Length: 255
Image (tube, rainbow, N blue to C red; front, side, top):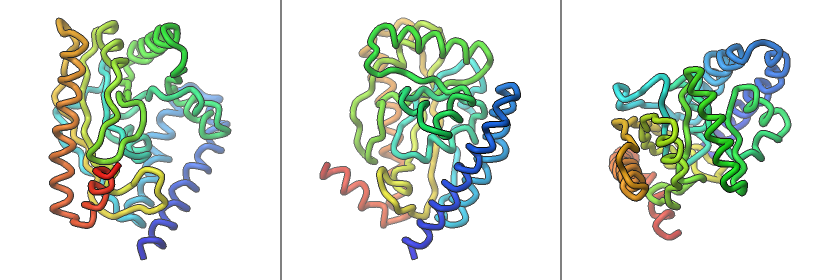
């Protein structure tokens, strides 16, 4: 049954995104705010409806009082593709910082460009950092929140590959608060897996932190501790509620 539900989820979810990317081409002729509205209010709600219907994945948002609509950076834990698709349902018009290779993917990548995502050359060194700073400022000046995955890649639940200091570089130079975001999506939409497991995917927005008057070590330690501590709490809670998810933490421990 899990295989069938997962198959239907993938077919309908990615099929909806594929159709959405094709429709995006003429939509791109209009101002960018039209593309943002199109994805935030039409296509993504439909795509995520299939996730709930077939996979049985529900969403719960905690810490709503910590959500800031503009002039903010979100530092989000990255466990699966699910948060990359769903985050704008909680914080509309958010621009993501992503690796530039994604922008060149036919249809999907073009859609990221039209939405206003921020491509970054990971091997570009100082020049890439300056370009990222400039592009982030353009988005925030327009009132758009910006999200960065500070680990730079997806991690298995209960693990981390280390937080990179690019988030502090942005916060310090743009004088913006950073809202940490913890989640447990990897328990249901596992990395590099075909299967989609039922349960409640929790996104918890934590109190904003500032880079002012802090060393890089102090800020990065505060950010990582906030996110990882809360993720550990969410994992413990979800294992108690859905015992089968313990297998994902066991897998993480082995790797």
